[in-house]
Length: 272
Image (cartoon, helix red, strand yellow):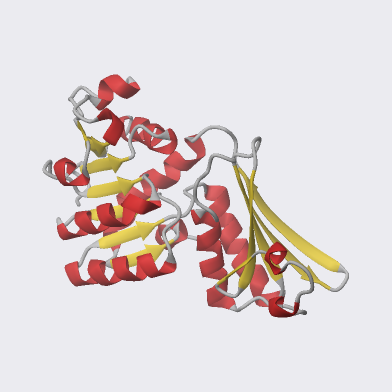
């Protein structure tokens, strides 16, 4: 992709909460072009009309990724559900299309499969559990803290309507912290008296708790504890999808800067 050529984008999940806001963001930029969309419930329609976009060209909506990729594009942004996202990502890779993943709920094993195929096909996949800049900073600060404070737990808050648990943001944080070290447990979980499940799920060597209740949108918290002191790092999101747009646009612009799989928006950000 060159600076004088627009980056052609297909968005899967284009009419959803986050996808629709991203589509508005893409259309408002000068260097990106939204060429197609995937929405099973709105197939064969014009995305301009569905979202009241300002694009001067028709943006066709397809029911499947295979149909959508008949229109040439450079980047697929997947904002769907974990049960179909892996198929769509792999389909795009085989078509020579780079992928930005906004879908949560994919496992480490899923990403290992995706990484292998991306490397074989010399394509790029950037998986971002959460595009909000505050989440990027939470991850960075938590990694720093884990080097000096050996015990922590993760709490993942979301609406009662969120189907995946834990969230992609929590999974990504657990994955990243596991690269620093495994959280120490004073009392091993298997020695817990009573109901062991109340201690949360062991993910990559640390306890993760998921809260799903009305009134929550998306929040992520890491609590570090030492004798007579604790550190709480927390991200809280409001009701709008706007905080995720700028991060997603950055991901689209930078996903062609590597080959294979990278997890986390910070991989294409300059922190120096």
